[in-house]
Image (cartoon, rainbow, N blue to C red; front, side, top):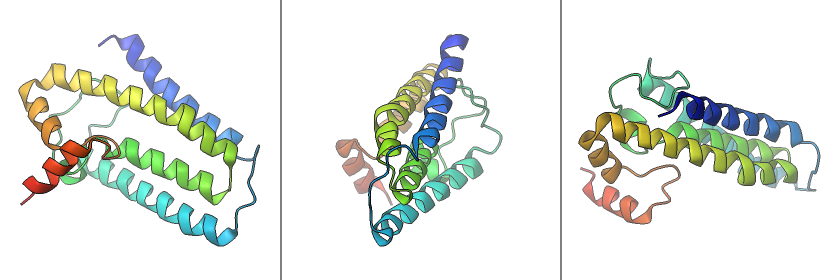
Length: 162
């Protein structure tokens, strides 16, 4: 994995996240406070929980690098989801967008932040496959990726759980 591409991916995700926060007040929708809070707080809260669980599972393995700095982590929240931290960031951002009724924030999340995170996750998966080989392949086959979008793997995963 080229060091420049890795750094670029990290900066792009960071920049799109900051851009999202910057555009939050630009285009607001008149959303009832109860609706915004009823959707926004759960999204934000679950996102924060996923991030905390990710940090606890990774321990010293967080460094912004795509190339792994520890052994393959497959326990804790990583036994259920391959990219819980990215999923948590996405949910937190969407929760914030919703709480503030920000159409501009929601659009930025969907069309800039999420695609940059998916790109980074794919770079990371390539590096993990290269570094861990079959160990990674068998983990990736059994555990769903970002937002449980892979229904086939999700169905297989749920039926294999003991």
